[in-house]
Image 1: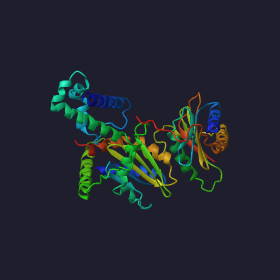
Image 2 (image 1 turned 30 degrees about the vertical axis):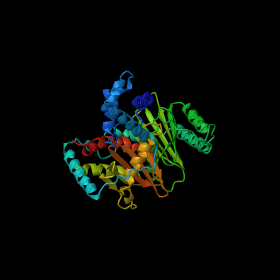
Image 3 (image 1 turned 90 degrees about the vertical axis):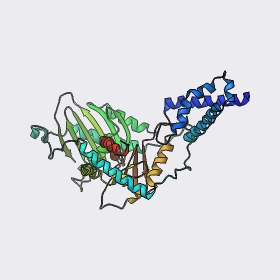
Image 4 (image 1 turned 90 degrees about the horizontal axis):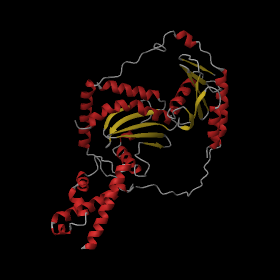
Length: 180
Length: 102
Length: 126
């Protein structure tokens, strides 16, 4: 019994550890519509924290903590599943045709409604330089020959520079990604 | 890997009045930028020079675009696969206008 | 009227040469808005039932690489390029020619952000 308990404690601490790293990095387990709300709340619940502390061994006689352990385990499995990069397990979540058309209708309806309440950005002025007074003087601006010369040199050197781009790998070719 | 390119960009920044320089590839993606210039302008810069190039479709020389705004100006040129953008700033204020030359 | 917004996105489409389609969908691929260059190629594949959900999954998986949340995926094909942006609950998709100005497409992102905020309201429950 003690052994099982220590293993569970260990698992629970890994669990909570993961949880803090989530808060820091907010990787993967950002709350989205795909995260299970129930499992989340269990991890936060005082009941689980109670089972973590060592002095409540008599709780084991009751059925409630057992359930918490179950939840902690399922939470663990869920976390692993969420963190694992698994391209094979593509969501086979495709919409029924009926739902698809229903949603199109719903969205267009809502867009239609909203668009009446939204302030549209003002009409763009037509015509060039209408917003600047005394535009004649700006139109007669000379082009600095320095600029064109500088640009020509820049482009020339850049062409050579771009050709000089090459990969010189110094570290291992296969690098493990920093998976939290 | 791209030290040569970095060196070119740094060199350009030593020219008087130059505050930023950027280089874009044929997809309008930034190959390198130095100084006070946002790497996100690479696409727009290339789009501008492509539009300007349409004015003289038969020209073999690459067009240079100069945009004037206040005491700053922006010089753009697209030559073959790459587009260069240089931001320049003068101490005295000049005002907004656009012009293009070949 | 949503004609305004269609006009706005059509304007964007004209600005980038070689851009065929701009579409806004929800994460399951249900279209909210789609503007396309009718003379250009047939790019209906962007609305295939599996197209957008595949992007959503790829985006989810790519977010696990330890590099932060995945924002944009650019896919280059022999005849097309597809730029998809994760604007959950919306997905913004651009389809263009292979030699289309990718940098320009990416620069459109912050221009449309304001409009997307409004469109988001249609997807989220009131």
